[in-house]
Image (cartoon, rainbow, N blue to C red):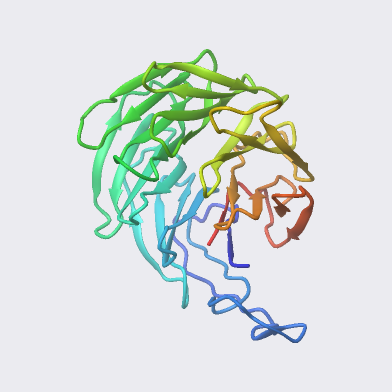
Length: 320
């Protein structure tokens, strides 16, 4: 099961580091079982950031990955071979809080504590757009997965903004009462899911520019949202130490909360711990303050893997 583990590392004096390749003793077989991934070793350690790593994503094509850090930089890595750090995107003036690739793997959206959203060309490493409009930390950014290329962002100013890279300012601005900590675009392009300090997950109708639905159940801040591969289910992570799966289809009888999972931890650091779906939708994963990566069966809700290795809080996870 190829996954990337993002490590919180002590700040280096220079902010620079070299790639360290750690090869496991069980490099070719694990307990006599042939390896199924194309990685050089079962666990690859990627180092170089000068601060806490807050966000990580594989690109949709699966050849590259990107990490964003408290050191203000975005690092680009090759997934296979020695996981070469082939690029650094510099431009944010504060911590990079979340990043996402566009579906074609050409661009990267990022948001930061510097109150900006940026769009990057992942091939040239150049910044395409710097989008200004939030008045506080921008906690989350989410691009559309199909159709017109747009992105949604949410921040501590309680604003949800929709960005079109062809337009200079936000095309839509929605105001919430509390800080917004997580956003996710629906596949139809007409709805945006948001989570925040009021513990609710709101579904915003972009045509009416209002909340169409509120999904309640979490008892503390929502820290991460992720749409399932088929676009019908929404995964949420919360500081109440639960992970939940919600049915987002328009008409649902009974409760929209399909599953509640636990085992992972949030702590006093109150980091925005994110979550992820496996590409086939059979598993979900989340970071945890107990230095572990947790993976659950998305049907039964039981923990199937608990992966050690980190030496501090695991902030983000992603499946290849």
